[in-house]
Amino acid sequence: MFMNTEYDTLENLEKYFPGRAEAHFRLYAPVLLSLMLHPEGTDG
Image 1: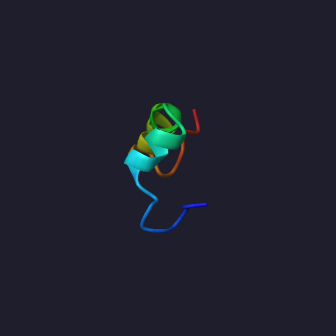
Image 2: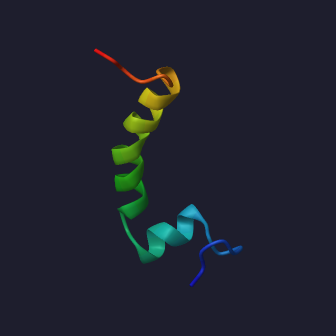
């Protein structure tokens, strides 16, 4: 286990879990951006 250690790097994530970090960034970045730009939410 290397979470929250000096080995917890993007390079190691890519080495042991290829493509996972990028997939998560692509999935969650639009959600986070929307929340940052519209923190009060959308009421329609």
